[in-house]
Amino acid sequence: MAAANRRVVREAVVQTVFECEFRGIAEGWLAIFEKNISEFGVNFEKDFAESLLENSFNNFRESKEWVERLAPEWPFSKIAKLDAAVLLVGLVELKFLAKQFDIPPKVTLNEFVEIAKNYGDDSDRKFVNGVLSSAQKELEFKI
Image (cartoon, rainbow, N blue to C red):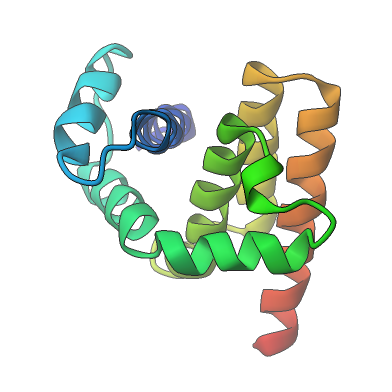
């Protein structure tokens, strides 16, 4: 599957997490994801999409705590909801999907920094890069 299609999946999952958080939706995220992914109009790797989506929601609390620990000067409630969604999904890919789908950590960092850049500004990109880089270093240390 083309790397570009994985980017579309990443963006659709980020949009889904953002929408569910913004609207306070605890259930029904699969239907929201399907609506979001359909807007891109591409074929995508279903296993990757399902894993990223399910892990993002099933590990939401753990990922949120991880963000709070990696960026202690930024309480989670003060992080822009879109940046938070990018971080949460990026952390899930780093921690739970990298080995399963043979995704180098550098690719994950680059992809989510690009998503942050596309939806935010330079400070958003730098913040996401800093937190995900710290997470990558922490994960490498534990291996």
